[in-house]
Length: 300
Image (cartoon, rainbow, N blue to C red; front, side):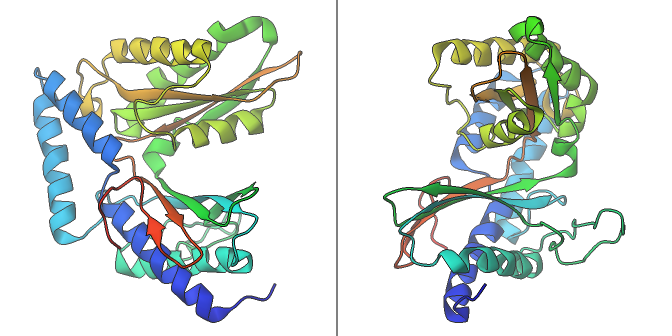
């Protein structure tokens, strides 16, 4: 595939700055939710843990360093308009941006090649950065979500296919089994993404995309929104608290995404984000102007 190196340089510079900022600054909705939870958690170790979290983010901003040493496996979720003029330049720009951000941020070297078992030292590897593609008709814009999939928050992830008679109770049971077993490893309070579909791979993908939704948002389906509320309340009753040291709340929220399923299968996928939920979204126009919509008022 041929591409214009000058356009790649321009686009990769912008995306590299975007990634660097996301590594050290939480999105607006996450900051708001953590502040709300900090007000509620007034007993035990919880206040001290929330104070440490706040100090951590303050120092990350002051020093221009990542908010957590585990900067994860870089993942991009691309929604690109069919009229975007630089389609050929997107993938090489994303790869180049990660190379630059690895040095600038800096990002920890996390890309370990499967089977060969060696760290590439650049956060570039086979199918890494992971890029998820979606085409948008009648658009000339590039909408890009970046997510840092850290080891702790990835550990509780799962996907499985249930017998349909297990129903939505079976989905909730699978989520609670994971969270009561591995939830503490995800550095709570985190965001829980749930995907419901007809096959494991679709459910897993939807669960990760659910993490891209704003904290506090709700599924437009009223039954799904009620399930989000019920599972959130149930998980909070477990009392993981900040850092897993106990408290009144375990999660920032629960987001569910769904796809129509086969009559004979009911699949569930779950992904978790840690309290330092480094998710960032940017909309880039053909003239390279942009809207950094998860971090309002930020100029790259």
